[in-house]
Length: 99
Image (tube, rainbow, N blue to C red; front, side):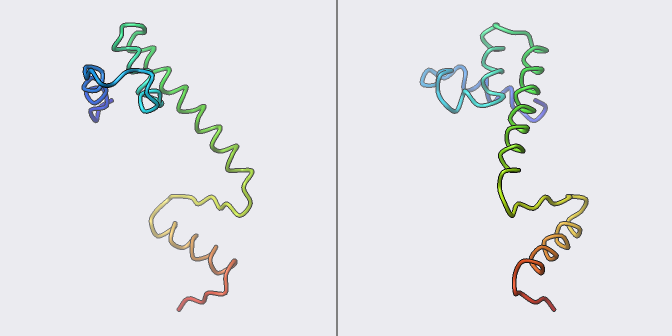
């Protein structure tokens, strides 16, 4: 919200060629902000709905990814840590050598 998301959706909301049933407006955040702009829900309710929908999507994505084989989860502590984790995975799963 702090980076101009509300203003972005407001600009779309007032355009005559865009409506709430478009797939792009049905995305998380846009849908809830649209409801707020139509005075269907309060700002607080909109915010709660965005957080809830985001968490729900993240949960579905994690469940979906867990079904994949050969998916590696990396800990993003630092750029160097990510690089070392990727090198380790490549060394274990390929014939590549690193000098």
